[in-house]
Image 1 (cartoon, rainbow, N blue to C red):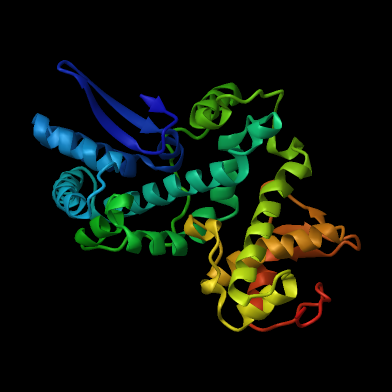
Image 2 (image 1 turned 135 degrees about the vertical axis):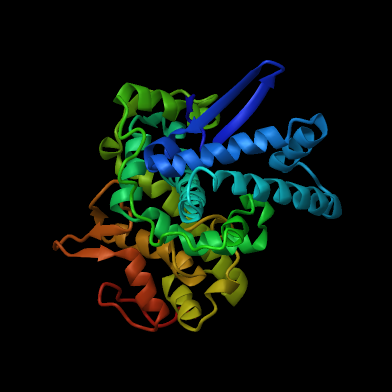
Length: 348
Protein backbone atom coordinates (compact mmCIF):
# COMPACT_ATOMS: atom_id res chain seq x y z
CA UNK A 1 0.00 0.00 0.00
CA UNK A 2 1.50 3.32 -1.08
CA UNK A 3 1.31 5.93 1.68
CA UNK A 4 2.45 9.48 2.28
CA UNK A 5 4.62 8.50 5.22
CA UNK A 6 8.40 8.70 5.11
CA UNK A 7 9.35 5.04 5.54
CA UNK A 8 8.48 1.44 4.76
CA UNK A 9 6.56 -0.37 7.49
CA UNK A 10 4.93 -3.78 7.87
CA UNK A 11 2.08 -3.46 10.35
CA UNK A 12 -0.07 -6.09 12.03
CA UNK A 13 -3.47 -4.42 12.27
CA UNK A 14 -5.32 -7.41 13.68
CA UNK A 15 -5.13 -11.18 14.14
CA UNK A 16 -5.77 -11.77 10.44
CA UNK A 17 -4.70 -8.53 8.84
CA UNK A 18 -1.21 -7.31 7.99
CA UNK A 19 -0.43 -4.36 5.74
CA UNK A 20 2.82 -3.31 4.11
CA UNK A 21 3.01 0.47 3.87
CA UNK A 22 5.51 1.93 1.40
CA UNK A 23 6.32 5.59 1.88
CA UNK A 24 6.15 7.71 -1.23
CA UNK A 25 9.82 8.81 -0.94
CA UNK A 26 10.86 5.16 -1.01
CA UNK A 27 8.68 4.32 -4.01
CA UNK A 28 10.00 7.33 -5.91
CA UNK A 29 13.63 7.18 -4.76
CA UNK A 30 14.53 3.48 -4.59
CA UNK A 31 15.33 1.04 -7.34
CA UNK A 32 13.73 -2.40 -7.24
CA UNK A 33 16.61 -4.29 -5.63
CA UNK A 34 16.85 -1.74 -2.83
CA UNK A 35 13.14 -1.73 -2.12
CA UNK A 36 13.02 -5.52 -2.23
CA UNK A 37 15.68 -5.68 0.48
CA UNK A 38 13.96 -3.07 2.68
CA UNK A 39 10.62 -4.87 2.36
CA UNK A 40 12.31 -8.13 3.39
CA UNK A 41 13.74 -6.39 6.46
CA UNK A 42 10.34 -5.07 7.49
CA UNK A 43 8.65 -8.44 7.01
CA UNK A 44 11.40 -10.17 9.00
CA UNK A 45 11.01 -7.63 11.78
CA UNK A 46 7.26 -8.18 11.80
CA UNK A 47 7.78 -11.94 12.05
CA UNK A 48 10.29 -11.50 14.89
CA UNK A 49 7.79 -9.40 16.81
CA UNK A 50 4.93 -11.89 16.68
CA UNK A 51 4.87 -12.05 20.47
CA UNK A 52 2.86 -9.29 22.09
CA UNK A 53 5.73 -8.46 24.41
CA UNK A 54 8.24 -7.81 21.63
CA UNK A 55 5.64 -5.99 19.54
CA UNK A 56 4.82 -3.73 22.50
CA UNK A 57 8.51 -3.12 23.12
CA UNK A 58 9.12 -2.05 19.52
CA UNK A 59 6.08 0.24 19.60
CA UNK A 60 7.42 1.80 22.79
CA UNK A 61 10.82 2.35 21.19
CA UNK A 62 9.38 3.90 18.03
CA UNK A 63 7.09 6.21 20.04
CA UNK A 64 10.10 7.84 21.81
CA UNK A 65 7.88 8.23 24.88
CA UNK A 66 10.27 6.75 27.46
CA UNK A 67 11.48 9.41 29.87
CA UNK A 68 13.99 7.57 32.04
CA UNK A 69 17.41 7.27 30.41
CA UNK A 70 18.19 3.85 31.89
CA UNK A 71 14.91 2.34 30.67
CA UNK A 72 15.30 3.97 27.26
CA UNK A 73 18.79 2.51 26.92
CA UNK A 74 17.60 -1.00 27.79
CA UNK A 75 14.69 -0.88 25.36
CA UNK A 76 16.94 0.57 22.64
CA UNK A 77 19.46 -2.26 23.10
CA UNK A 78 16.77 -4.88 22.50
CA UNK A 79 15.36 -2.96 19.53
CA UNK A 80 18.84 -2.64 18.03
CA UNK A 81 19.39 -6.40 18.27
CA UNK A 82 16.07 -7.06 16.58
CA UNK A 83 16.67 -4.72 13.65
CA UNK A 84 20.18 -6.08 13.13
CA UNK A 85 18.72 -9.60 12.88
CA UNK A 86 16.12 -8.33 10.40
CA UNK A 87 18.86 -6.71 8.30
CA UNK A 88 20.48 -10.11 7.87
CA UNK A 89 17.19 -11.40 6.50
CA UNK A 90 17.22 -8.57 3.97
CA UNK A 91 20.63 -9.75 2.80
CA UNK A 92 19.04 -13.01 1.70
CA UNK A 93 17.14 -11.25 -1.10
CA UNK A 94 19.60 -8.44 -1.96
CA UNK A 95 23.37 -8.26 -1.65
CA UNK A 96 24.91 -6.56 1.39
CA UNK A 97 26.05 -3.44 -0.48
CA UNK A 98 22.58 -2.95 -1.91
CA UNK A 99 21.11 -3.24 1.60
CA UNK A 100 23.67 -0.79 2.99
CA UNK A 101 22.93 1.69 0.20
CA UNK A 102 19.19 1.25 0.70
CA UNK A 103 19.45 1.94 4.43
CA UNK A 104 21.48 5.09 3.85
CA UNK A 105 19.26 6.24 0.99
CA UNK A 106 16.14 5.67 3.09
CA UNK A 107 17.54 7.63 6.03
CA UNK A 108 18.61 10.58 3.88
CA UNK A 109 15.44 10.65 1.77
CA UNK A 110 13.28 10.65 4.90
CA UNK A 111 15.53 13.25 6.51
CA UNK A 112 15.43 15.42 3.40
CA UNK A 113 11.63 15.28 3.14
CA UNK A 114 11.33 16.32 6.80
CA UNK A 115 13.69 19.23 6.18
CA UNK A 116 12.04 20.29 2.95
CA UNK A 117 8.50 20.18 4.34
CA UNK A 118 9.53 22.20 7.38
CA UNK A 119 11.64 24.73 5.48
CA UNK A 120 9.49 25.24 2.38
CA UNK A 121 5.91 24.24 3.12
CA UNK A 122 4.86 23.84 6.77
CA UNK A 123 4.50 27.59 7.40
CA UNK A 124 2.49 28.36 4.25
CA UNK A 125 -1.01 27.56 5.63
CA UNK A 126 -0.57 30.39 8.14
CA UNK A 127 -0.68 32.72 5.13
CA UNK A 128 -3.66 30.95 3.56
CA UNK A 129 -1.42 29.12 1.08
CA UNK A 130 -0.75 25.49 0.26
CA UNK A 131 1.96 24.11 -2.05
CA UNK A 132 0.27 21.58 -4.31
CA UNK A 133 3.60 20.52 -5.82
CA UNK A 134 5.24 19.62 -2.51
CA UNK A 135 6.54 16.25 -3.71
CA UNK A 136 7.61 17.63 -7.08
CA UNK A 137 9.55 20.37 -5.29
CA UNK A 138 11.14 17.86 -2.94
CA UNK A 139 12.19 15.63 -5.85
CA UNK A 140 13.77 18.61 -7.57
CA UNK A 141 15.76 19.42 -4.44
CA UNK A 142 16.87 15.78 -4.15
CA UNK A 143 17.80 15.12 -7.76
CA UNK A 144 18.75 18.57 -9.06
CA UNK A 145 20.01 20.40 -5.97
CA UNK A 146 21.85 17.57 -4.19
CA UNK A 147 19.80 17.98 -1.01
CA UNK A 148 20.62 14.61 0.68
CA UNK A 149 24.38 15.16 0.30
CA UNK A 150 24.14 18.68 1.71
CA UNK A 151 22.16 17.39 4.71
CA UNK A 152 24.52 14.48 5.41
CA UNK A 153 27.14 16.25 7.62
CA UNK A 154 24.49 17.59 10.01
CA UNK A 155 22.62 14.28 9.91
CA UNK A 156 25.77 12.53 11.11
CA UNK A 157 26.14 15.05 13.95
CA UNK A 158 22.54 14.53 15.08
CA UNK A 159 22.97 10.77 14.76
CA UNK A 160 26.09 10.74 16.94
CA UNK A 161 24.17 12.59 19.65
CA UNK A 162 21.34 10.02 19.71
CA UNK A 163 21.65 6.94 17.46
CA UNK A 164 18.44 5.41 18.83
CA UNK A 165 16.34 8.35 17.66
CA UNK A 166 17.61 7.75 14.12
CA UNK A 167 16.88 4.03 14.13
CA UNK A 168 20.53 3.02 14.63
CA UNK A 169 20.82 3.49 10.88
CA UNK A 170 24.57 4.14 10.66
CA UNK A 171 25.26 1.36 13.17
CA UNK A 172 23.20 -1.00 11.05
CA UNK A 173 25.17 -0.07 7.95
CA UNK A 174 28.45 -0.63 9.79
CA UNK A 175 27.29 -4.05 10.98
CA UNK A 176 26.76 -5.13 7.38
CA UNK A 177 30.50 -4.91 6.87
CA UNK A 178 30.35 -3.07 3.56
CA UNK A 179 30.27 0.59 2.63
CA UNK A 180 27.20 1.94 0.82
CA UNK A 181 27.58 3.57 -2.56
CA UNK A 182 28.49 7.21 -2.00
CA UNK A 183 27.73 9.75 -3.15
CA UNK A 184 24.22 8.40 -3.60
CA UNK A 185 23.03 8.58 -7.18
CA UNK A 186 19.36 8.85 -8.15
CA UNK A 187 17.76 5.44 -8.55
CA UNK A 188 18.01 4.28 -12.16
CA UNK A 189 14.77 2.30 -12.06
CA UNK A 190 12.43 3.82 -9.43
CA UNK A 191 9.25 1.92 -8.63
CA UNK A 192 7.09 5.03 -9.15
CA UNK A 193 8.73 7.58 -11.48
CA UNK A 194 5.88 10.06 -11.01
CA UNK A 195 2.24 10.35 -9.97
CA UNK A 196 -0.63 12.38 -11.35
CA UNK A 197 -0.42 15.89 -9.83
CA UNK A 198 -3.84 15.49 -8.17
CA UNK A 199 -2.66 12.30 -6.46
CA UNK A 200 0.54 13.95 -5.29
CA UNK A 201 -1.49 16.85 -3.90
CA UNK A 202 -3.55 14.41 -1.79
CA UNK A 203 -0.34 12.89 -0.43
CA UNK A 204 0.97 16.38 0.35
CA UNK A 205 -2.19 17.30 2.24
CA UNK A 206 -1.84 14.14 4.31
CA UNK A 207 1.81 14.86 5.08
CA UNK A 208 1.05 18.44 6.18
CA UNK A 209 -2.30 17.72 7.82
CA UNK A 210 -1.18 18.97 11.25
CA UNK A 211 -0.05 22.28 9.77
CA UNK A 212 -3.23 22.73 7.76
CA UNK A 213 -5.53 21.87 10.68
CA UNK A 214 -7.24 24.99 12.00
CA UNK A 215 -6.00 27.11 9.10
CA UNK A 216 -8.07 28.50 6.25
CA UNK A 217 -6.30 27.83 2.95
CA UNK A 218 -7.45 30.28 0.27
CA UNK A 219 -4.95 29.49 -2.46
CA UNK A 220 -3.45 26.15 -3.49
CA UNK A 221 -0.62 27.02 -5.86
CA UNK A 222 2.78 25.87 -7.09
CA UNK A 223 5.98 26.92 -5.36
CA UNK A 224 6.87 29.10 -8.35
CA UNK A 225 3.71 31.18 -7.82
CA UNK A 226 4.25 31.89 -4.12
CA UNK A 227 4.76 35.53 -3.13
CA UNK A 228 8.30 36.33 -2.02
CA UNK A 229 7.00 37.50 1.37
CA UNK A 230 6.29 33.92 2.49
CA UNK A 231 9.91 32.97 1.80
CA UNK A 232 11.18 36.05 3.62
CA UNK A 233 9.15 35.39 6.78
CA UNK A 234 11.09 32.40 8.21
CA UNK A 235 14.40 33.98 7.20
CA UNK A 236 13.44 37.17 9.06
CA UNK A 237 12.68 35.05 12.12
CA UNK A 238 16.09 33.42 11.79
CA UNK A 239 17.71 36.84 11.36
CA UNK A 240 16.19 38.12 14.61
CA UNK A 241 16.98 34.90 16.49
CA UNK A 242 20.63 34.95 15.45
CA UNK A 243 21.09 38.59 16.40
CA UNK A 244 19.59 37.89 19.83
CA UNK A 245 22.16 35.09 20.17
CA UNK A 246 24.90 37.54 19.15
CA UNK A 247 23.71 39.98 21.82
CA UNK A 248 23.86 37.26 24.48
CA UNK A 249 27.33 36.14 23.45
CA UNK A 250 28.92 39.53 22.84
CA UNK A 251 27.13 41.62 25.42
CA UNK A 252 26.35 44.23 22.77
CA UNK A 253 22.76 45.45 23.14
CA UNK A 254 22.06 46.12 19.46
CA UNK A 255 24.30 43.84 17.40
CA UNK A 256 24.39 43.95 13.63
CA UNK A 257 25.82 41.89 10.78
CA UNK A 258 29.34 43.18 11.40
CA UNK A 259 29.28 41.84 14.96
CA UNK A 260 28.17 38.44 13.74
CA UNK A 261 30.84 38.41 11.05
CA UNK A 262 33.47 39.18 13.69
CA UNK A 263 32.30 36.29 15.89
CA UNK A 264 32.17 33.76 13.07
CA UNK A 265 35.48 34.80 11.49
CA UNK A 266 37.10 34.37 14.90
CA UNK A 267 35.90 30.76 15.01
CA UNK A 268 33.16 31.20 17.62
CA UNK A 269 30.13 30.44 15.47
CA UNK A 270 29.37 27.24 17.39
CA UNK A 271 28.99 29.28 20.59
CA UNK A 272 25.90 31.04 19.24
CA UNK A 273 22.81 29.43 20.74
CA UNK A 274 19.71 29.72 18.60
CA UNK A 275 16.92 27.28 17.88
CA UNK A 276 17.40 26.49 14.21
CA UNK A 277 20.84 24.98 14.73
CA UNK A 278 19.23 22.31 16.92
CA UNK A 279 17.58 20.84 13.83
CA UNK A 280 18.75 19.35 10.55
CA UNK A 281 20.59 21.81 8.35
CA UNK A 282 22.20 22.03 4.93
CA UNK A 283 24.98 24.37 6.02
CA UNK A 284 28.53 23.19 6.51
CA UNK A 285 29.21 24.72 9.93
CA UNK A 286 27.34 26.45 12.78
CA UNK A 287 28.95 29.73 11.73
CA UNK A 288 27.65 29.48 8.17
CA UNK A 289 24.26 28.49 9.52
CA UNK A 290 24.12 31.60 11.70
CA UNK A 291 25.37 33.93 8.98
CA UNK A 292 22.89 32.73 6.37
CA UNK A 293 19.63 34.39 7.55
CA UNK A 294 21.38 37.64 8.50
CA UNK A 295 23.23 37.89 5.18
CA UNK A 296 20.08 36.90 3.29
CA UNK A 297 17.97 39.54 5.01
CA UNK A 298 20.65 42.18 4.46
CA UNK A 299 20.81 41.46 0.73
CA UNK A 300 17.02 41.39 0.40
CA UNK A 301 16.88 44.83 2.01
CA UNK A 302 19.39 46.02 -0.60
CA UNK A 303 17.15 44.99 -3.48
CA UNK A 304 18.31 41.45 -4.15
CA UNK A 305 15.59 39.06 -5.25
CA UNK A 306 15.00 35.33 -5.56
CA UNK A 307 16.29 33.50 -8.61
CA UNK A 308 14.53 30.18 -7.99
CA UNK A 309 11.64 29.52 -5.61
CA UNK A 310 13.30 26.23 -4.61
CA UNK A 311 16.85 27.53 -4.21
CA UNK A 312 16.64 30.34 -1.67
CA UNK A 313 20.39 30.59 -1.22
CA UNK A 314 20.71 32.26 -4.62
CA UNK A 315 19.78 35.94 -4.89
CA UNK A 316 20.06 38.25 -7.88
CA UNK A 317 21.11 41.85 -7.37
CA UNK A 318 19.72 45.00 -9.02
CA UNK A 319 22.71 45.01 -11.38
CA UNK A 320 22.20 41.39 -12.42
CA UNK A 321 24.86 39.79 -10.22
CA UNK A 322 23.87 36.46 -8.61
CA UNK A 323 25.05 35.72 -5.08
CA UNK A 324 25.19 32.31 -3.43
CA UNK A 325 24.41 33.37 0.14
CA UNK A 326 25.73 30.12 1.64
CA UNK A 327 28.95 30.51 -0.33
CA UNK A 328 29.19 34.11 0.87
CA UNK A 329 28.84 32.91 4.47
CA UNK A 330 31.60 30.35 3.95
CA UNK A 331 33.90 33.06 2.59
CA UNK A 332 33.25 35.27 5.63
CA UNK A 333 33.96 32.38 7.97
CA UNK A 334 37.35 32.00 6.23
CA UNK A 335 38.05 35.67 6.97
CA UNK A 336 37.31 37.11 3.52
CA UNK A 337 35.57 40.46 3.02
CA UNK A 338 33.20 39.89 0.08
CA UNK A 339 32.57 42.93 -2.13
CA UNK A 340 28.78 42.53 -1.84
CA UNK A 341 28.98 43.68 1.80
CA UNK A 342 30.18 47.12 2.69
CA UNK A 343 29.83 47.19 6.45
CA UNK A 344 32.09 48.50 9.20
CA UNK A 345 34.35 46.03 10.95
CA UNK A 346 32.47 46.48 14.24
CA UNK A 347 29.54 48.45 15.62
CA UNK A 348 30.77 48.65 19.19
